[in-house]
Amino acid sequence: MGVGNVFLILILFLQHVFFLSPLPIYFDSPEYVHLIQNPDLIQALTSGHEPIHPGYILPAWIFTQTFPFLNAVYSAELVSSLFGSLALFIFYKISRILFGQKIAVRALIIASFLPVFFLSSVNVLTDTTYIFFYLLSFYCLLRSKNTFNRWFWVGVASLVYSIFTH
Image 1 (cartoon, rainbow, N blue to C red):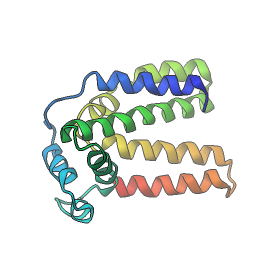
Image 2: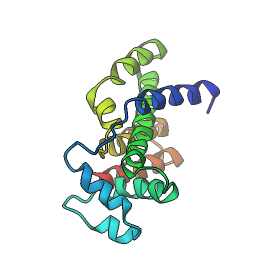
Image 3: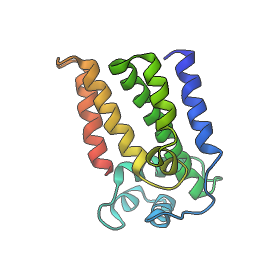
Image 4: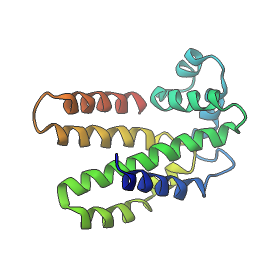
């Protein structure tokens, strides 16, 4: 990964971090915050209402347990911001393959302000995690060029994880 790609991901991430919400205000956010604070991973992954969203709870739980000095809401939102930034980056890579650099940059700018990317990235929501894995699966399958190489299998694994997330 080149320096330009790392810089792009960093810019997208910082755009989201600046707008993090101090409270879990959307839908099931308070429940997700409660689950990721549970020190028992198995209980955190199996508790809660259906669907449980273990694909989101797992990385958020790992981040929260790794950095216990952070507020759990911010920990969960940082995970959402990271996956949102990575999803936008993968969106850019897909757009560049299909349409070229110029259109990919324009599409990235527009997409970065869409609610599915922006609002989901600054709140405790599962959307950015499964969108990232959906887009990653599409990108990998595009790169596989209809062969059963490593890109194909990473794409299949990403698709399975995205379903596991949602």
